Image (tube, rainbow, N blue to C red):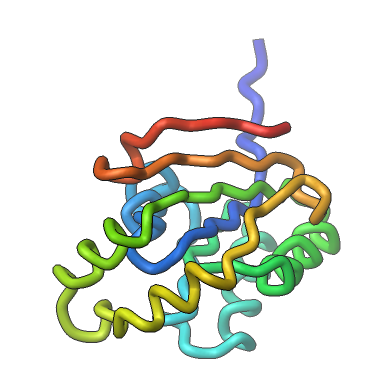
Length: 154
């Protein structure tokens, strides 16, 4: 029996600051190229990193808040142009828990509380209608994101 090559994909994480996106990216998607706008610092560099990974047959996990349909569209478009799967993983998180997690962060990782509240207010839950091949919802509650409960829409 032949061993099949892993499918190249783009995973778009969605969640407010403090919902567990980076923790999930570093654990569940540790074999993917992690793309985080806070690290790469520009949209141009972000797209270049995504394209380089895909050209090298590497899967990508987008580790940004991606709380609006518009903010996720560019990744869906990139995936379609590259001919790869694109999936959404949405981490739900009560605002009080996100604020508590955020308060424990140090330095640049910590964002002002009003920023967490703004992202929570403008959050649009990802759907298949946006163009995703699948949408997975992880209920983070008080546990770490990797241990949350899951609901999958395909």
